[in-house]
Image: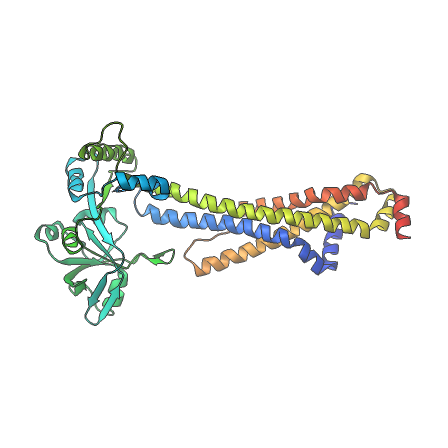
Length: 411
């Protein structure tokens, strides 16, 4: 029997027993759907997060109370809580005055809950209030849409001015130019001097619900106990490692750390954030792929059982073919092709479902979902291989049937 004829026989068998074929292929369909959808999801999320992190700047390093390793490991975090002191404003000023390789050092503090903003008859709650230095705009991912950002003159004179996000402009000043208007932040009045362009959402969290005020005023309103976040801008991404080393050296110097002492602060850059994110998505993808593989094995076992049943049903056919001169390898190849076609059809249906999933997810979420064709090809090959592997035993059983015994069994 030629390959093409064997494939048509397999497809005809599938069509003749639609419900049985669907139930047989269910494991393959679910596994391939999961595999392709997970790859598409991880690829889309990585691209989305990469774009957002890239906006932070590839030449920026942040000085924080804790490092990423300490914040993501419970044991290290408990130890760091005893060892790491908050970053102080004096330490920021020391870095600002002593760093030689960096372009600039900016500082900021923020609170993300418990705040109340008012403007006329409109109000908002739980807006992110940021106390920032005037040069913070150079290390932020915000663009000035109207007006200006905070200035060094505002810092020197203690001017009560504010730079607001797009959400505040839309909700507190609907239909009105917010520049020059007064906004009340937790009982303190500020004059709006600028508005940021809209940034949209990240995983459903708005990036436009914020207000920037001068850092000194922020600290007078909310106290000076919190750690100051320091962002250091390198002249270029190439010089970032050298700038990071200089920041580490100066921080160890100002904190009087000995050579054998661990750092009592954390340095975080965009590359370390992406590394952490890839590790996280890698774990999630690994778990999902493991689940998919279980479904794939189950689907393969079901295919093997169905093929064994098919051998029993078609014993007389096998006997007639052998009596007419069919060789063992002809029978073997026929059943292997049928098992491969059966599994491949399940793979195609799984890819179709995954494609529908990517279209739906791309329509309802901001993630840039796309169907990775390399993953599709790999999934189809994998499905076919599974069909061939689990079809070997039934095919061998069919090939070894004695023609006389086979004919007598159906007589």
